[in-house]
Image (cartoon, rainbow over all chains, first blue to last red; front, side, top):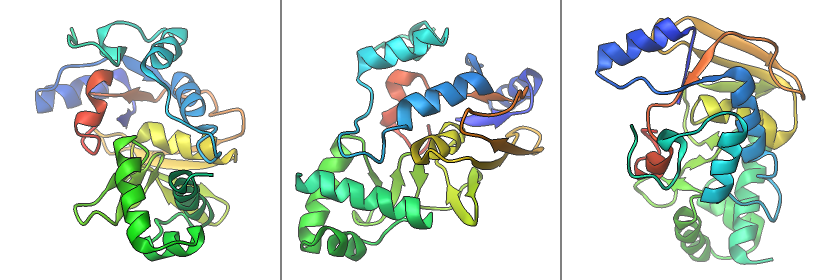
Length: 76
Length: 146
């Protein structure tokens, strides 16, 4: 889970390492993910999102498909 | 409150206050129990994906979003420095602490430095991108690589 300056830099990095290029996430989307995941982490009753909650969080940000499905066994 | 919850909170509060991982003994003293019981709690917390431990079974590698070891993803809140496990977690530290701060990292391809001042409402408009190589269903197969 890494930062990149641009889509072109992601493409170069994936090509150099032989990795598939995955969906790109903006800084706004990343902030929303971070706050959704972690804003209660220091509280007594905090817990990680469950698979159905994860799916809903991702979908709310337009992050859909097998790649973002925590229970998928095919990744496209 | 259960031992596991008290252990989790002691770990997270130590990270929040110091930016560093607590030792087993520090957690035991904070919780008020034996180190052996804390070690057992660590195993259960690992099973629930709350902790990632080093091979010694007692050193904390990750208490997401905090990293127990230095990484390229650094968060500054006033004078305290925190290490994050990944780009996502660098934002996550600020979210978990409900504080404004600065995220420093780099472009993984070019090495260009990233320095973002992030307020309570999030980052300013920014064209940098986040890329995750591992599909969500596989994140915890090897969370350190993820």
